[in-house]
Length: 432
Image (tube, rainbow, N blue to C red):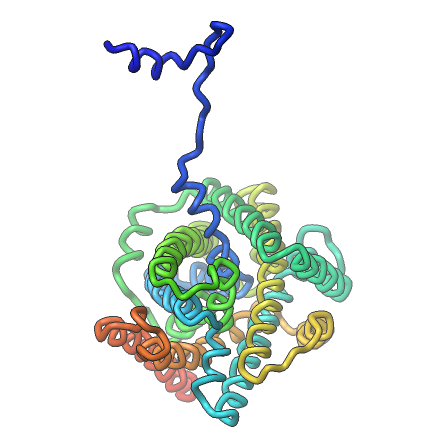
């Protein structure tokens, strides 16, 4: 062995004759990736928000494992749509609402803004109710008081934006980790039938009209309109500010990795919700109609650790997704019609519908499911907006969608519209 190889293996000698230990260096590529990780984790919160709890628990308790394939299909759609949103933001240097303001007339943008705000209201309703329920289930706090406390905690998370977007990303990533660990605990305790899980992950099945309603709700809960708008804004802080194609290509490559990691974590959490509900409630012959019922039923069936994990996951989901909803609302208002409303005022406005529902004693589980169905009807709007902008080479340059990508995007929009049409038919025919 040559002397150079020996020194490389043993370290180098300094002037005093002692051996210097070789330093452990973190690979430069890993450090580069860390720099870009974050936006997709913020977005992923919307894919595991309290609306997902409602639709996934309802689906699992009523239809066993048969609707897991809906989670997989929704996740594949989500990866495609969030990648396109990020690409629009990186290629143009503007958010999707800002690009709509440039491309479409003022009157059309006002209509877009109204539709987007309706979606944001449905989202905020689900998220706020989730945080309130989490506090109520964990600590026994009365619902109206828990609602006010949820609003206060959401304000605190949003206030961290003053320290930069990265600070909010770190907080939300930690909350996503809490949700993930909680549901890993649930799965471990539930002991599901993994063979059935595997079959129904890849084999589509819709047993009846009610299953269609739940499936569309799952789609609405998984692929969220407001974060399609938000993602194109979140990538801006990583943009170098130049028009260099190489830099943008690298940015998009890193963001695709960010999306792949975050969206697949969201998929496993969502699938875990259905699996646990099927393994615990369906197996026991229970149809769960409320979140409180789900929480109470877990303890005698699986023990206090399971019910505690459920409450912690719901609280973390509600708080993190409420903060993300606020950020999305700002992007929507500022982008479409250049309207800027103070965060605190907007939070108060979006808090009121949830508080009214809490005071009236309406079943939060039903409200959550219906809010997600409403979101699935709004979802085609941002998809069509993205497709119309992303195909234009004068706006996107070399990042303009190819014919194959445009066809795939139109196919996703068509599937969502078709599902909604079926849902309308079943609803008015009294079959769902």
